[in-house]
Amino acid sequence: MAGNAPASVVRRWHDVLAIRPRGGGVVAGHVLVIPHEHVRDFGADPAVTAVTAAAAAELAAELPNCNVIANQGPEATQTVPHLHLHVVPRAAGDGLRLPWTEAR
Image 1 (cartoon, rainbow, N blue to C red):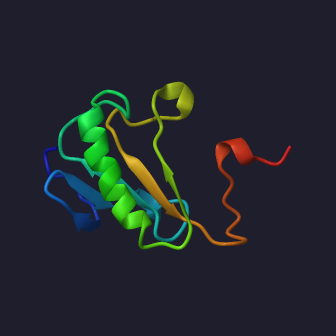
Image 2: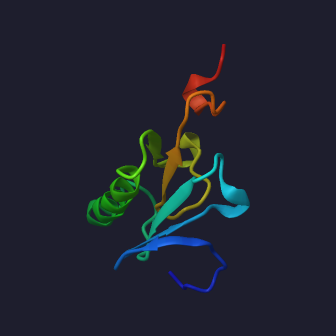
Image 3: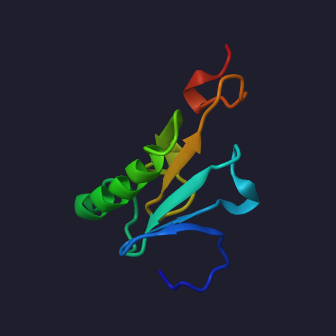
């Protein structure tokens, strides 16, 4: 990770960084958890994924309700070729629908 892109840092760990997504995210409090080491996606390096997931779990533990989401591959809506986990706080009536929960 070059460390020169502008970001609103939420928390830092030795190997991982949590930032706010550009534009604020899908709901207030949405955070991206990103390893410093370049890893293409969730399955590319299980050790790096585990460290990143542990950091995401630490953030999730502070929330009463949330989704923790990782996308792997373009057909699974991965648009950035670098491992990142979304921690998305949830509340009743927040109106956020995940791709597989769209009204039919």
